[in-house]
Image (tube, rainbow, N blue to C red; front, side, top):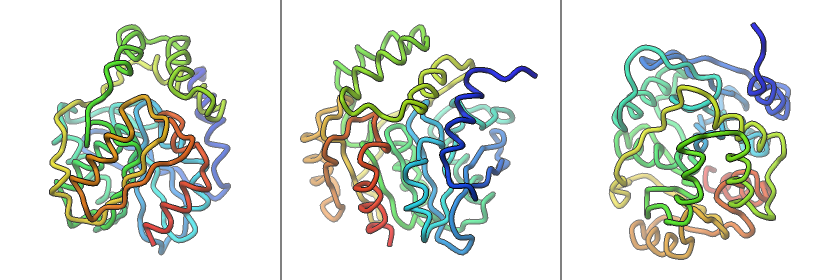
Length: 275
């Protein structure tokens, strides 16, 4: 079978991970889920959920640092581009995403895990923290969307052409507008733009979770220059909603440049929280 441009870009980014990284396909009722695994076998499980079109490979700049003590499971999201296959039960709503994560944790043999999500992945993570609080020991949300506030109208307007008629050129233009001088890794940008054109993608939408009911320790890290929403307002709302949570702003970061922007700062903050 001929390899596509997306396959080649995927392999290129996979090569950026530590050499001992393993690829596992975990069976779920919604199809086998591709998970990139790194870190000590006895380490606390840390499940990383990326933003839409980012794939689990986007955490390559974080894997070595976070995998010193944790056993990392970086996931290609169900319904999105990547190595995860869609077959079996239909994927319809957020309840299906919760059941998918239930099966994923069962499949990796984790009664509980740290959970860290970015953007759409943070929305999934927050909802799962409400669905199965006993299975989430700590919850980290990176520039979460649709958790504490909605998208800014300007962001949605800019995203609309890519959503309606996705092309690689439109995805690159949108990414360039949002990330500006942050300029995330070129190989990842190529993968993101090609992911937009992959057929069969289905990201789930839904209401905001009741974040005030999250019972586990929570860390919220926001991008200083995010165009997805107004960072200062989201930070204020997060502090009011979760007064016991840590809420910080990552200097220089934009929404789509995470988690690749200043990875040392991000890695240190996440490692301190997870320890």
